[in-house]
Image 1 (cartoon, helix red, strand yellow):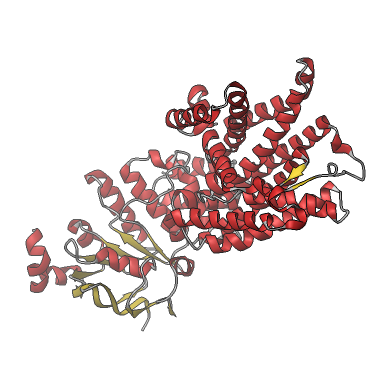
Image 2 (image 1 turned 90 degrees about the vertical axis):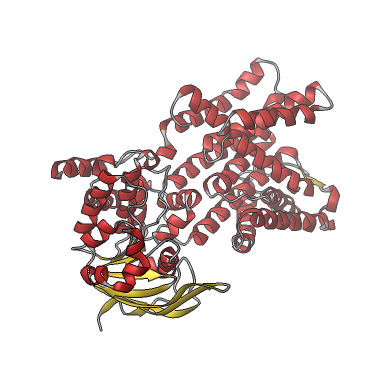
Length: 334
Length: 248
């Protein structure tokens, strides 16, 4: 008995590999990011430079999906208003640009601060509810933000506004070049991936995951979930705001349509499709969703019907989403 | 008056049904106090009220010199009153070690730390291993908790309660659903815990109760009808009529 204890204690002293940050997930994520990294030269080789523009959009939505996954997949909070943060980020660009501030970093800071504040206030109220009420109240806050920007006639109201030019970086129009912009977005995605992997494996992430799995158990050992869930909500909101800054620059146009509840729904579909609670899955989900949309809408006008059917099949037959499918095919947890 | 846990006229009703009907009880430090009673006597409701997961209608609970009547479950745990659950409540997806380390983490500094991996915090893991060793689960530390046998899950549940740093454990039917051998391991475990912890044990298994308890209280329809040492309670005619007679 004492011998078992000794060897096990030695075991404990060596860092136990966190299951959620397992090797499979890391490899999957790195492979995805590596594929993204070689895409521009590949697109040029294939004579289809427009591919980079589409890929930029995918990368940006992958960042948004990653942020939602922290809330939905790790925090078990079904937020139906997440697109609001995309809108805040996008409007940070157009509003600051109108005030003569074109710098991407300053706009990003403003977007992060604004989104975090909105997340803090609405999250603190929403987290007083649970289950379907949480869904409803986050939806309501999302719609409030949407209608606020619809009524903002100085910035085009319902019609939105076209950007004069993309944001500047270090005073230069660096991101006017599509490939440079693509790599900047990709760098943000990679950084977000690494950051969130770190966060979910941390003490904070452990409390968040434990609360998702068994809230009462966590309370019974002395954790009050509210503060942890709210913090996750704020981190996710801030990150999604940053995605909004990039999205505005990608489309060079900003409108309230960025933050409709349908858009929030699409983000949820991306996360569920990819596999909730796996960061690699969130990226894979964004890729799967947008590629499918792109391919199908090129084939037929009635692509939504086919799209819906494919989503139903994927959700039914790939428990755990794309990430779950991969982990069953190749072993280990994706 | 040095009771660690002191309960005064505690009440809880659901409509006309008085589930807890004026319970008063003192549990001194170091005692293993068993609560027995037939099904539906209100034992689990009583534990819920003590642990803070259920609000009492009236009455008072003092623990370690402080009035905890209106404190939340989280606040009571922080004061050293921890519970286990009748229906196993563990984090199935976590490793056995991480289940316990999470409980250690709850009382070891801030959990608003974002950048270092919790699983490699050696201080947390070492304390968790101690708790696991106490319940004889050290060799299961790296298994996923959901894959343990039922008896092992019951042991893990106790390790988690220990790891909160509790002075007193509220154990809600720790033997529920266990076979004879698993039960024997748990009874042996509780006998060892007696030396370091004050324990309130809710249990159906009479053999276990009379083997372990310093004192026994009998709960019938929300009232304590007898409290005393096991032999006296066993001999009490009211108890025999209400409970033991039916069972034995």
